Length: 384
Image (cartoon, rainbow, N blue to C red; front, top):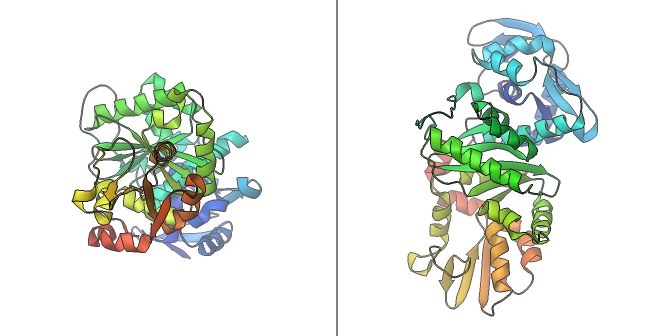
């Protein structure tokens, strides 16, 4: 007999599937210890008895089923196990059946690929204890200006944003938007490009941005959206995305014309740790305050992208992993003859050096050092 209790790996995996429908087997490492999760999945593809520690209810069934091949292999709930969703929340079963066609999944690769990209983004949210369960979140609307969004960071999937009622929201199906992260007075559009080059689809992305702004304006205190989080397999994806964007002859469709800031998050432990930092209040300024004295900072007033000026050297911080700023910084230094340095995390060094070349100095700092400097707030609020 297995006990279904809050916080267990069993509970976490069922919670994940209750909102994403299917999860890529190749990405189980995003949830924690990959070996442990794979062993759990293998065990629960066979019949077991589960006991709800809160109510004493029992259920005997196969819990999971695995479909597909290679990197397309998906983990889903077994049909006979769906009553276990009622153990999570009274609305979990209803939400699941409405979202996933009464447990009938389309068999084509494009639908599965999109479900996987959404699931991987939700895995990041789970790891940082950010609320992502739609059935636990306030229902958004598009009629009046109301303060519905909570002050704490929350994640809404793109399919749930499209259900608000505005017909134009269906346009988001033509983009790679997987959801939106609302953090108080700010909002980040979330994209997951996996191992592919991110290609922004012109006016479709502008329409997506407009709709997100309307949602934020009518449901909270959001008056501007200028940032996106881009999830990718590794920094080679970030490099390819920057190179591809540089080929775009129509500057109005270049990605930094759509979102002025695009923060890249790799799909590994360093990316999860960076994501934890990004949901802290005023995180960008706090990172700059850690690195520079107030008198040396530019505070965005310089004539190009840099963050501090010390002893005749212009210093740019890439601790925010902002690809758009990095691209603008490179364009500026290629046309000027000054001394430049970049501060980045240790795991970003190879990527930054390859993109900027040898003419710019690079200094690195460990993630451990930054996390320790952020103090007890990070550990008590969002540490798993």
